[in-house]
Image (cartoon, rainbow, N blue to C red):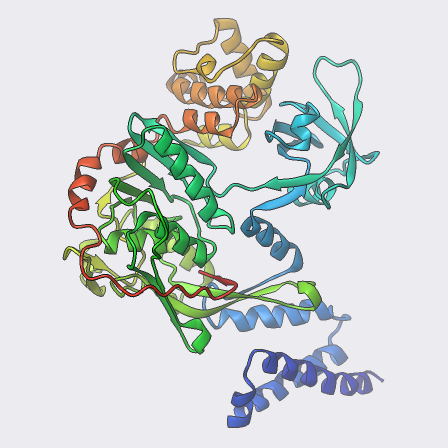
Amino acid sequence: MTWMRGRRIGPLVAAMALALLLGFGLARGLQATDDLMTQLHMFGEVLNAVQGNYVDPPDNQKLIRGAIEGMLKTLDPHSIYLPPQRAERMDEDFRGEFSGIGINFDLRDNAIIVISPLEGTPAFRLGLRAGDRITAVNGKPLARGITNDDVFKLLRGPAGSMVDVTIEREGEPAPFDVSIERARIPIESIPYVYMIRPGIGYLRISRFSATTGRELEKALEDLHEQGMRSLVMDLRSNSGGLLVQAVDVLDQIMPSDRMLVYTRGRIPSANADYHSSDRPRIATDEPLIVLIDHGSASASEIVAGAVQDLDRGLVVGKNSFGKGLVQNQIPLGPGGSQGKLLLTIAKYYTPSGRLIQRPYAGKDDQAYRDEPYEEDVPPDSVLAKRPQFKTTSGRTVYGGGGIYPDIVLKDGPLLTRPQVDMIFKRACFPFAAHYVTVTHKGQKWTEASFGRDFTLSPDEWTGLRRTMTERGVSLSDSLWQADRDFVMRQLRADLVTAAGLGPMARYRVLVENDEQLNAALGLFPQASKLMSHSVAGPPKGVKRLRPVGERP
């Protein structure tokens, strides 16, 4: 009976695999060689043997997904299969919105802790506040060991639908219920935009989503209205996103008719040249500094590479990741119900012709992803072996291993273990929430309330230390004194959050001691000098192809 079952499955497996291959446009390959059919037949035989003879009943889904993932591992580190839930999260990130109630949260003691409601969202309008504990959703207590994904499933849903939450609030005698109507919540890809110093604008691009170009246009307009004459564009820890949005960003800071990036692949539709358009723009004359680090990858490197090749600005920081491959998003199953395939279809090249993809042959996935973090920049002996290219003004730049910065800026000292714990355990937040909502209830707060001169009384310092110990961060007397500036900065950031002053105010506190950023602010004389060579040379013809769904 077992053997008969295996025989019945065999033709079905072969037919499914053949349909999959044809779906990827490989029919000509099947006609051209018998080898692929032979390998496909062998795969069917192995699957039949497992189905019919393995000691325990096999899980078909795991078998097929394992085969798919194993196949993709033979290609490159960036061709991957995304299960439906991961594919949905990625789509949300790159759409630039989701439907939910609008809170930043933490999980603690089997409750959802509200860190802050997002301004303008349902949670904000209904008065949820920092420190609120959500203990039940739709009348059901939260499950023990609840995860972030569990929270997303509970609180997110179609816009207009309702969700009931039970809240415990310090100072209230009993829990109370709130009915919240879900709404569309924007996910900003440029969350921080402000004048960091007189005349100097700052913006941080966290990802390249469908809304990045529009967000940048508004950000530049706002900064110009505030008197911006120079710009810092921070791409640190930006792992990439949509290629067309990287092109849009470049199009807003480059003069017309310049090559920005081009892609080349095996299929004709993967080949495209991207040039700047003749759109009206307001940000082509300011000295520009682009900050990168090892986490800057893909679309970030497209932007940094074009800025460097065209001498539009200084690229500073640490060597970028080195991802020069373009993936196409291929939904699997009806409506993408079975996930999504991210398949590499092209390589991208900067205006000078650089391919910045790091070598990956012979490396396992973890080693490949860890490699960029081993050193700030490659040594001269490594650079000497890489392909060399010239920028518009004749400066030497390198391919084959990410973007090497024009000026290397090292990080500050590595965080100590207690400092890491303070951040990830949000050790100061309970104290901050109590300070704002109970100790000083009703007080009107501004960002200046928690400026650099903010202090605590000796009793308050003792209370903060006790709270941090309860959160699992215990410091010796000597460390408590040595880390006092760090502790105070984390506390001020949490106080700003608890007071509802917004993520921008929190961010400004946290980057006060950012050594890379502070060093970059002193480099505008060099950036201004470089502007004299910016994007010189004959213009290129405008040709703006936009392949749908491509994602570097």
